[in-house]
Image 1 (tube, rainbow, N blue to C red):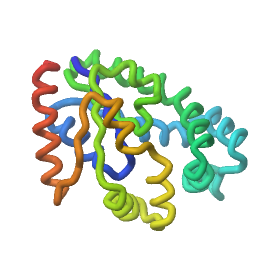
Image 2: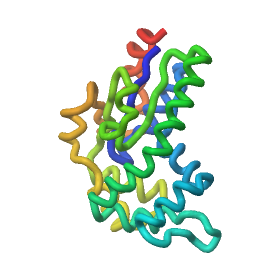
Image 3: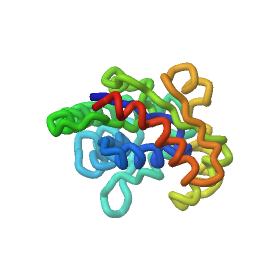
Image 4: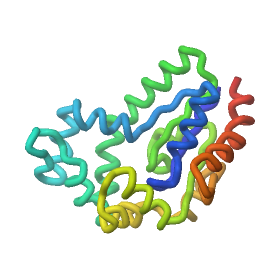
Length: 200
C-alpha cells in the first residue's frame, strides 16, 4: 500500500491528478473538503476561529469562508495561524479515513493538501508530488471555478508558496503547462501508473 501526498498551489490542476487516482482504483482524501465539512459541523473549530479572527458568520450563522479568506490571505502570519487551528481537527479525521481505506485493502491512497509539506500528515506519506502551473493560468482557473474577482484570486495566489519551495521539498513535480485538461490527465495517468502498480 502507498500513501501519496499531493500538494501544490490552488488552481494548478490537483483535481485532475486526483481523478486519475480514482480511475486507477485508488482512494482520495481531500483535506480541503474535510476542513470545509468540519467548518460546518464542528462548533469547537468555529468558535476557535472567531476567537482568533473576529466575527466570521454570515446571516445563516455559518462561517463565511470568503470573509475568513479576506483576513488571512493578505497576512502570512494569520494564514499560518489558520492552518495550525485547522490541522488540530483535520489531521485526526484524515488518519481515520486512511485507516478505513487500509481496512478495505485499497493499494493507493492519495491525500490532497495545499499545506501538506508543513502539516503532520506529510509524515504519513511514502511519496509526495506537487502539481504546479503558471500563476496567471491559476488565477483564471480560480476565477472561473469560484466566481471570485481577479483581485481576490491574485491575493490567494500570492499568499501561497513559490514553485521553488515545492520543487525543493517534494519527491516529484508535475507541471501543468498542458493545452487542455485532457492532455494533463494523460500526463497524470502516465505518472501514476507505475506508483499504482508498485502499491498492489
